[in-house]
Length: 187
Image 1: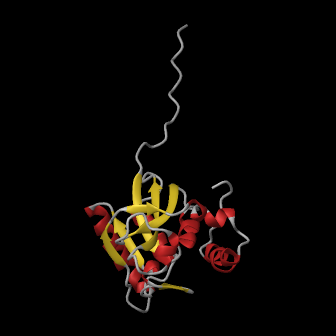
Image 2: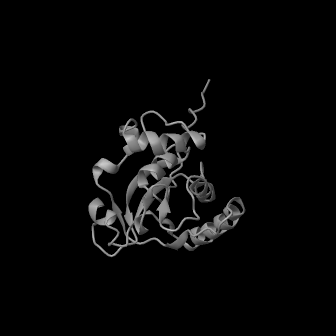
């Protein structure tokens, strides 16, 4: 009696998309977004400035024009760009110009760097969805994605590697708790 060949194993979605967001300190933004199902990679870095391959110290000086951002690789079959944007607007105050909590300066601005016309339209729609939840006007910048410069290695996965560091305990852990997110082990 012939047997049927085994069914092929399910394959992961080969589609990956890119998103780039700035919402204050990249340690906080990274810690939130890497908890979301469908987010495959989060890299902290710098974008939107005039200096080639900037350092953290240069960006912190506020003179390079860069924002601290995260670049996200995600599976759109598991989380849509619109859902990522909704998390982005929940995770920070998009009504404060160049400031998030104790961090202030243009490097901490709220920004969505878009990678396509579709992302540009989605970002504008997300602002419209989010605005009723804020008393003050949303000041998030939406602009085409410039060159992304990965931050130094010690900034990557900062919260996961340094959960007991003072800033992490005071700023990031309460933010994750407020958003109902628990750090995933091993990420």
